[in-house]
Length: 209
Image (cartoon, rainbow, N blue to C red; front, side):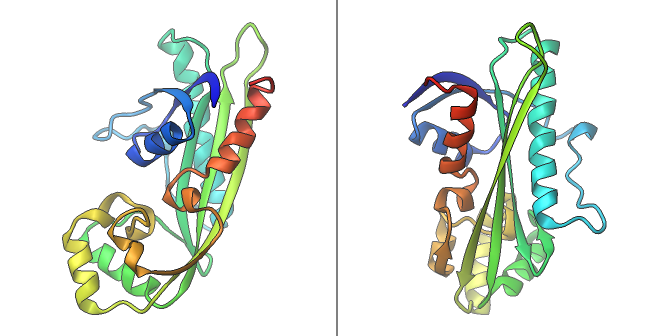
């Protein structure tokens, strides 16, 4: 669909799959080593920060950092796309679980309740001969309601390992689909990259595509 090429500043296989699904041409841009977090990409939730502000801040930090890396690595100056997903439960940011006990606690909190899934998408173009750096961001907000989960269901799901690298300790595209009673919003946004918002952003950078 979209011919112009971009960089994806993300290790998420789900985001790669969604971009491929949409026909968007991209190259991977590794912005950090998973074993050595980059201080420029601190994902700590700041005291008093609203979840929507948090997720947009992190997505912008990823994209702008990625754009800076292009010149350092002498790579072609294509726009850099980054995204961040988090759960908003009663105004609290719920990210990826620290361990199995944390995943169990998170799923117990989500059981029988509605929460928001926030995914911010940012595209940043590197500064260069064409002008200064340009940054555009959009936010996808979806609601997900879980049915009441049993202790055994949560235990078996956590033992599967699926929750460990996902915000909110679940993947709607995986085994946790059976937990979801209702969604309102963007399914791809809940997975990790809202394709509608992504396409809108790309049109701003490539209006003739």
